[in-house]
Amino acid sequence: MACILKKKSVVVASFTALCLLLLAMRLVNDMNFPLLLSCFGQPETKWIPLPYTFRQPLRIHYGYINVRTQEPLQLDCDHCAIVSNSGQMVGQKVGEEIDHSSCIWRMNNAPTKGFEEDVGHVTMVRVVSHTSVPLLLKNPDYFFKEASATIYVIWGPFRNMRKDGNGIVYNMLKKTVDNYPNAQIYVTTEQRMSYCDDVFKEETGKDRTEGYRKVPYHYYEQGKDECNEYLLHEHAPHGGHRFITEKRVFAKWAEKHRIIFTHPNWTVS
Image (cartoon, rainbow, N blue to C red; front, side):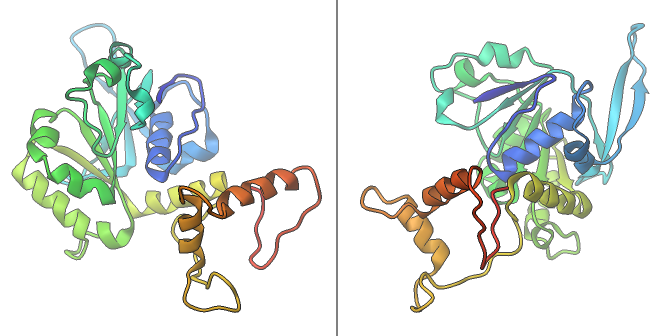
């Protein structure tokens, strides 16, 4: 799925995709999403002197800090193309259309080389989960040398992104900018990360970071974990009890009938 973002809201699954989408919407001039956009704070606008009479506004986003310079992200977008990693992109042949966008966003370590016809070859911003940083470092010359013009926005929990020497992912990024001084790598601040977690919960009804309580599959049996069993059955090739799908059915019914879920408390939203 390639999403063209211009006066539209786009639904993208996964927290990485949500971060990418929220940040993209924050940078699109003519959009107004008060709740979602506040995730990225109130940016300042500066004018960059150009040799022409036209002046391009540049917005400063304090929720994203450059690993090398410790300066906030400066970026502005008009017409964004958000390119997902879905296999649906194969054979679409929309690479040229994507490349004509003023800002082109990609996720994690999705390559363009060899897939230009379908997904394009330009990458302006790449939003990366902390878990995908090692995947970038498997091919650092490609991501941080050949694509040195790309802006990398890395998000992750504080325990991995802390700057006191104990943040394992942040340490990787520090070493990367030492080896590739032209790499434009930004990390999401703890405050913005916390607020984005709240936005994710409000928009999806799910808490991404907290609230998970490990419980047995049956209250009268020990040994099996409920969450693991749900996932095992949901993805079984045949004969599984589709608990997650079943809950979607319950949610649909709850929209039409007065059904209250308790212990734990669970709402359709």
